[in-house]
Length: 311
Picture 1 (cartoon, rainbow, N blue to C red):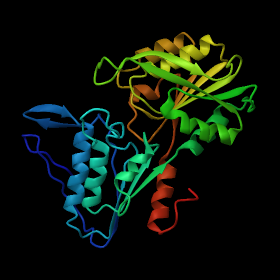
Picture 2: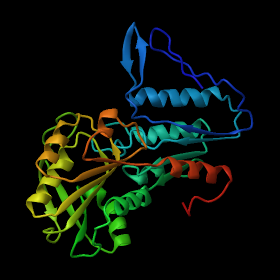
Picture 3: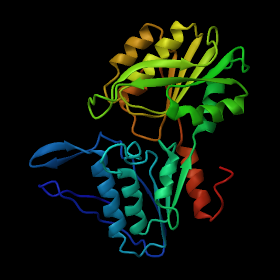
Picture 4: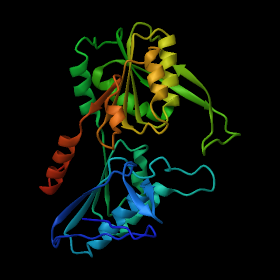
């Protein structure tokens, strides 16, 4: 498949071989900002909107000839725009309804910001929200063989109330306690589209002398997660390990380099589900969690018509 661009920046999708009566699995990384195209003679970086539009072009180019279409979108497009607080658009729900109307049978995503967005397509299309907890557990126990898994030596921590469900799930598997930070925001002010955080208040027992594992769905600029790490170290945490399914690092790496140098955290783990900047892979504080075989297993299971429950 190819999505060539006209000089104006407009595009089309061209499928170069027959797809008649075949099951299609379309993989799209809406976070891959490394791809550019020419527009009015200048390079233009691909945004999530561009990637999503190309996805729709590919589906449209199928002309209804494919047997079944499954979209594998690890980072769910507009997943952070899933609920309405003001008179604003519900972009994630609109996206899912669009894919449903275009004949998509399955949408596979990972660690959706809020899995309840699947309520937007309750009947015809299927939204599978897959957790990468197995892969995180495997690499944690491989990289840190000296971990002592009990309430006296380990704790899972949610950096905000939205991550609590992920932390409760992992902590229940390990049989250890949890803690949570509550983000106090200034709701009278909006900066860069968000209410600024005033403070992080910690709820939970003492973290002193314990290995702390912080779990979230994504790292964007990193300011919030680094503040949480610093607070944990100030409270006496032994080691702070950060797990995030998606590492966006939208403001670069300097803040992380500085926090690592001062000992705020020991390691950050993110998955290969989205584009990873080459500079990130060279960082001494970074560890990549491979997900390729897991995606392959999901495709193989779907293609055989088997249940995804075991996976």
